Length: 186
Image 1 (tube, rainbow, N blue to C red):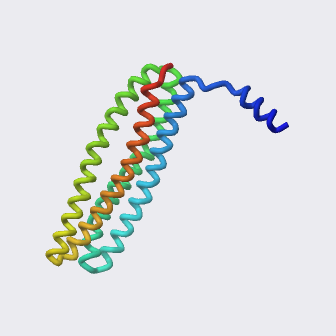
Image 2: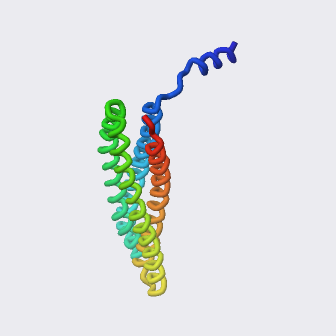
Image 3: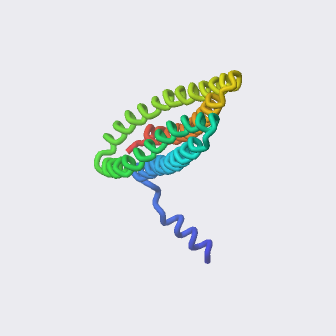
């Protein structure tokens, strides 16, 4: 009885149209963007809270650690707010465009995603540069016995690494979406 029900439901379901499949890919991509917004927001709040606590901690090491935490925390919070404000409108607009003008959707999203993907090269270069800059600063701090530089350098390297990892996943998600757009034949 159960097997017959499953088979009848499977057989009765029609395959997705190209527009429905593209819509699913688009929603999956932007769902990931929203999830990353939550990650950025949470990390930003943790960074800002930690920076405040470390400044109040009173040592040179903790004050040094607070500088990159505060700076990167502001960036992370800004990214989260931007994603939360922009994403729902983008999804609604793309949903409407997929229904009414799929060719325009494909052309516009191809161009937009090429720009987004080029941005990752810049972000990764900056993050790798900040990572190695943080490592160098911590080395200088260790050699010169500057706890402030040591704390700032170690924390900058750690924050840059976290951002690099998040961008690695975002770039992968973008590549999957970009491939779906490229293969979209309406």
